[in-house]
Length: 314
Image 1: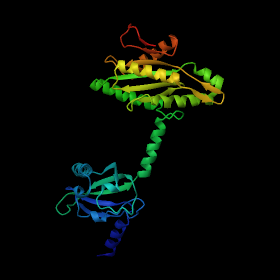
Image 2: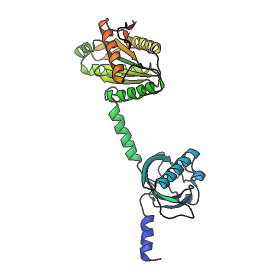
Image 3: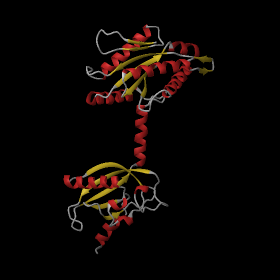
Image 4: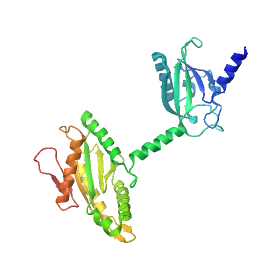
């Protein structure tokens, strides 16, 4: 073997990321590089085994499909996926990173057959830290800093998603908008820090009355919104009553004494005549407006039909 060939093999073996040669049937034809055990496990024993031999059925089928798609399209493909060391039979447990890992896979068809089979080169780069950072940044962009619940942006995105499901499948959907009555008095009498405390504690208390599927968000200031998937009007009104009573019973303790609050609630339900979520939001907001003018600490439902009287629940 020439010096140039030796150098080429040494360079490939020293690649920081592991390089897999995988055939169309899912056989590991070769594994090179990826020797840093801080980021990668030692998978050298996988050579001549198949994906089906060492991976759970669903993961093996996924990798096999990606290989075949790459061969069919005959081009470089880049994708992200998760895989833990425990998912691969025979990987040493005393070395290598622990837990679920995320990888960027760069898959390129090879021009020549490997033992009579078409094959790809699959370069796997560990992007776990980047993936975690992206998750944190996304959570921050969707979370209200003060209360820890959804912010307006996230809430509208969730409402849009569920409204689309309503339009497509007819799945019931209700929306609730509520705010704290006379909240300015709390800020004036106890200070804005106490007001912030009330908003935070109110959000936590509301969660105790909700289902896991319900989506609570801060709409702005002392106003909150609640997306209720798969919820008919009667159930939404019952929840609104329970939520109103629960909030009324809470005592908020601060340095200048304690305070109690009440909330006013407006409700709307999705209708086939709604063009988009703006119609749903407008009716819920109108219900809140009517609740305020009815004396506060009450619930109003604004129907879709023009001219119909609103439903009242004291």
